[in-house]
Length: 127
Image (cartoon, rainbow, N blue to C red; front, side, top):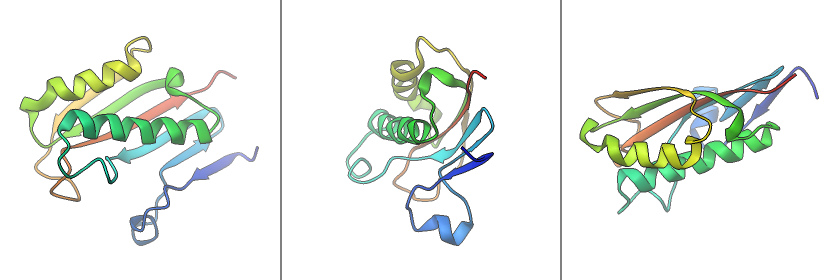
């Protein structure tokens, strides 16, 4: 493996903004802020959107040779802090045994007004 591995999402905004879904550098994996993807947006609540985002994160981690078990930190952005229980439920389902350091903050908006949650993840692999 080279020293740096870029893992694209395939989304059109990557080429506009100049980023990729995740980057593995050495034993670290950084997964960019990740939101639900269709068909998990319209008609989906914050729990369902959280599950979708976390599934995308898990796929990126796998492509980097990692897994949710290696995650040491998450940052979650929500547009409505009163929906924290829905986010917490999805987060616990993926990370309940891992217990990464986590931050959750309310933001005024995400890139698409239909989105209610965005999640970042950082993993460290054993040497």
